[in-house]
Image: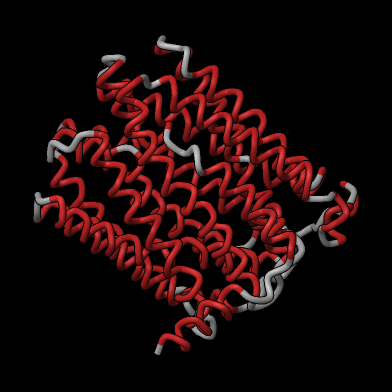
Length: 401
């Protein structure tokens, strides 16, 4: 049995090119400092005494900036290249976070969180495009899973360490989060050479691919469903920690380990599971993932113990493992040469979700209550799963130019 398990994991990681590992290393370093957004809602309401509505607007300013950043990142990727966009994104977002740690005013925080969303979100379509160029065919899902593994391995440390750092001073998490972004930029500058990517990297504006995702109706339907399920999922970054803190009474230092369950599961199982499922339909697995996210969220209000909440984390994490990397694979396979703009649409949908979720989540926590919120989100997740299932055959057809 053990030799088979070892062989499975060896096969799951084999065949990936050097460039994919460099992208994953940079993502790992960047995410090792991921802590500000996890605790920002608690910081704004508990330390700066913002109202729930004010805190929701500050968090949504980040999402609004990310909407523009995701689209801008995809646009620039097809024109100036993935390396320049990634390095610029990491440097600017890191510096913005450090400055944000010193600001207490509502108006300035709105502006800085918007700028942080704008600069940080530009990274994702560039990174996705780079990974799709390094990894072709069946290797593509493996490349996206490797990048997510690196991201979640880093996030395993971030919230846990951040939960203890803020007991000393919240300023520390802004510095650590910012410095890890700068360190990731250094890795890309040193090890990701401009000529190491596919020929599309050097296309001029006049040679840019002509296909537009805005004219691809089936892809727009897919993006609409992706936006819906990611909006459900994005409540984890705003309502989830605040719900655990206020409704269940967990301290910040106990919230971090719940995030660690999510990230450890992804690190241990995602690559191997996607390797086992590599012959299965990507869109069907996305539908299953959406269903599990909905079930995990809908089950949350039914128990109050720490162990029970941890169990719900396991359920929605399994959904995340299927939905997130395979949505990127569906998008990359659909895009063809227009990878930057298609990936930009995917990133923009994620960013729009980050904008919507704090507004709806904080409104629900203050009006209908946390339990009702999670039941509604659970139902929405199940509805998204049904929508993805209906698209399973039509989306396989290649779009026309």
